[in-house]
Image 1: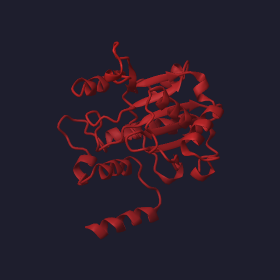
Image 2 (image 1 turned 90 degrees about the horizontal axis):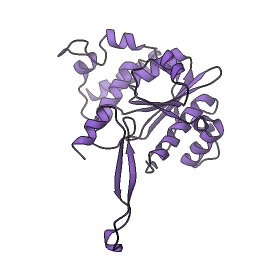
Image 3 (image 1 turned 135 degrees about the vertical axis):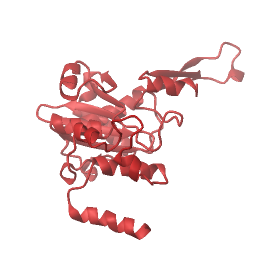
Image 4 (image 1 turned 180 degrees about the vertical axis):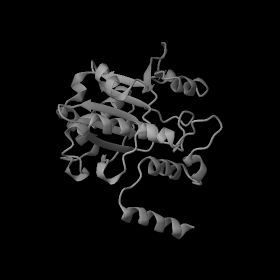
Length: 257
């Protein structure tokens, strides 16, 4: 399993893991077996699959009447984010967060591919998953709270729907050990410079366009821990707008170096 599971997931396959469901010593008959976990490109906690220097984000997109909602979850770290806006804005987020898998409502493939292309690994869910009532119930139950006001996302109705769809998907794939997912954060649109996928590619911010070449990330990455490496990559694709937080970062860097 350790050998072939990473290969299958990297090839974009969904893998059902079956295991014994009862103690062999407790029965004289054939031991009952069943699916205990469904591993997908966006939902995995296996160390052999994950690259700990980058996030493994599962994303969900909800097409609202006016705006488009999007949510991102890295189940390995518990980081849970949401936002909403135009198709162009959501496209930038899907690319900059390097989404490994994207969920959307069944029957919306044409809309999705028209606006976001066909390079993402995607999975369609039933329309009942993408309802505000269902989403709020899932989120309130997960966070053990009465409302979402404390997370600053109450007004992001489409983002809430997308976030709820992700939690529903975790349940469907039998990933029930999610107590570490304790908060949902809003991606602050006005805080960052918008960089589209073409700019990221042409400036070689994350990856080189030439085999064996260097990117900005590979040149400056002197981080010594996986969280540090993930943070540096995030800072590169989401550059700050305002001088104060930029100077705050520089002050911290000066302190250590």
